[in-house]
Length: 228
Length: 224
Image (cartoon, rainbow over all chains, first blue to last red; front, top):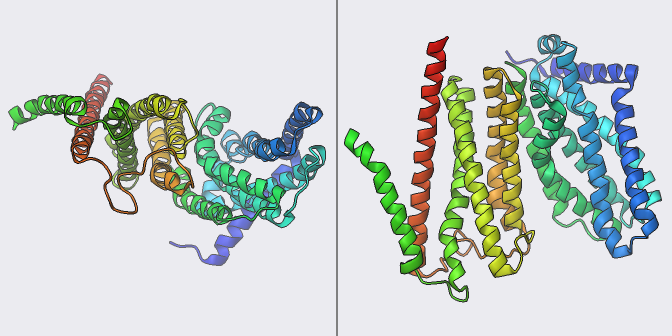
């Protein structure tokens, strides 16, 4: 029995709204992600800044460190959306309330908004602390959007898998990183290009292709992960 | 039929022994490569077998999820991943040894080296996932989903990504865009024989592993 489109959209929106309502009550994920990202950023800046990185060293290393900060922040805070359902035993109610694809999209939208908020917070601070000039701001925004989407999509699927396992924190990192590695490499290259003012080349379309693949894989595999 | 089954492992042993002899005595050293090129007859088949193993795991996992949820299919997938990791590690190590001789360093961030490393990480995570789930059915379901995800990831890592890079230290692959085989005829013969031998070796080891697990499973069930 296929739900009609309007009820699917209503379910997905309801899940998204529920996620944010719960999150705003405790502000757990937001504060964890923001603090973790900010702390890591300070560590990076304090380690590198006083040394005075040369321009060529900077363009090699700084995009890498930026995306590593994002990646580890996401690994620290995002899996909680599924883990919490299992721990508080609300997962069963969720299985009854929403179709798997609507649930996946609702959680994905939540993860996406959290990551975008994080990027909006971290990027200006990072650019300011490392004294980075961005020659192609449009490309940077596109990279943050496409890369952030890929992070959200990959993390949501892996979080759903590990929520039903033990040692969730470390297992998430172990499972997610090989899946997210192509995304990371492409995003780093594009960020470097944005800073240096070079054209995106084929990397942006490859990144969008990766995003599409992860979304399709997630939508197809999530029902099997979610339903016993 | 039974006697044929008994003979097959010995035939495989003989085949692989001939491959080893052929690699050192029959095939010439590649032009400009000195004697070290002979490692190719083992390095390439092992890399190929690791991909085949991961493909097998993905297919068995698909069958588990959508054709009956028989636990032996899930166990078969796990056995395939273990073997794939073993062959993959061997391929990486032999590749690193050859890289030291040919390119001067064990690790060069060559796209093919990097992508097989990522593939090994991916499947090591598969085993970590299996270890982290207690309930058998949940473990089988989650691991199968991950192995099916690997059906997309592994071909990308083994075949697409190395060809995407602008520059690679690896020689042109045998399956290349020009559809031309650049190797000496004798080398091709030994390489193909080695590929066949290693493939048969993988399937034999996989079959043994599955049979051992079946027996262990029957034993546990009869003890309940």
